Amino acid sequence: MTQKQKLNIFNLVAGAKCDHPPHHNLSTAGANAFAKMPTDYDEQAKLTQQLVTAAQNGDKDALERLCIFYEPLFKKEMRREIFYNSIGYEEGLSLARLKFIELVLNYNGADFTHFAGYVRCRIHFALYDEMKKAWKRENNETAIPVGDDSDTPALADNMIEREELAILLKLALKKLTEKQRNTIKALYFEGYSGKELAAKQKITPAMVSKNHKQALKILRSNIA
Image (cartoon, rainbow, N blue to C red; front, side):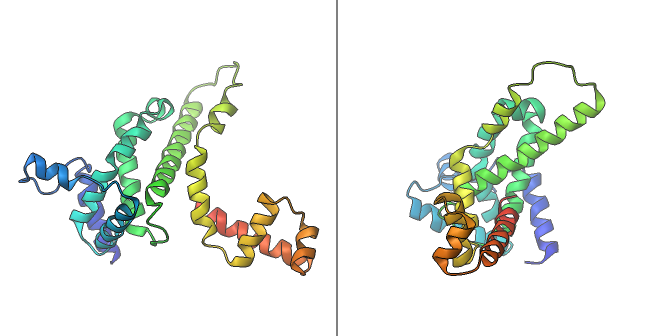
C-alpha cells in the first residue's frame, strides 16, 4: 500500500469517526452482526488478521469494521477520570481512533492472538502522552500552586495495568534473538548477575553486557 493510499483511507475513516457501519442500508440485525466480534479467541485472531490485511491493502470497509469492533475500548479508556478531565472526552476519542487507524495500517502481524491487548496498551500510552502534554501546557500558562502532591507517584504507578504491560512486553520479547531473550530473562527474572550469567553461558562478561544492551535497545523501540 502506497503512502498516498494510506493517507486517503486514513482521512476517510477518521472523518467518519468510526461510529457507524459503512453499509448504511443494513437492517438493525445486519448492522449488529456486522459489528460483532467472535467470542472464540482463535476466531477473533483469524478475523482480525483478515481485516487488518485487507485494510493494509486499501479496503476501507475492513478498516471501518475494525474501528467499530474497537470503539468500546476507546470509550472505556476515555471514561478514566484522568483522561477526560485533562484531554476532554470527544477530543480523546478522536485521538484514540486516529491512533488505532495508524496502528492497523502499520501493524507487522507479529501476534494477532494478543492484538486487542496490544491495541489497548498503545491507545493508553497515546492518551497518557497527550495528557502529559495537556498538563505541561497548563503548567506553562499558570503558576503551579504549592501543595501536597504526594498522590502523584501513586497516580503514575497505577496508570498502566500490569496485564497490559505484560502483553506488550511479551510482544517485544519476540523481537529478540534467543541469546538476547535468555539474557533478559536471566538478569531480570531469574536473578543472575552479569558474571554469573557469563559463567553459565560460558562467555565473557563483556559479551553478556553486549547482549544486554542490544536487547534493551530493541525492547525500548518496541514498547515506547
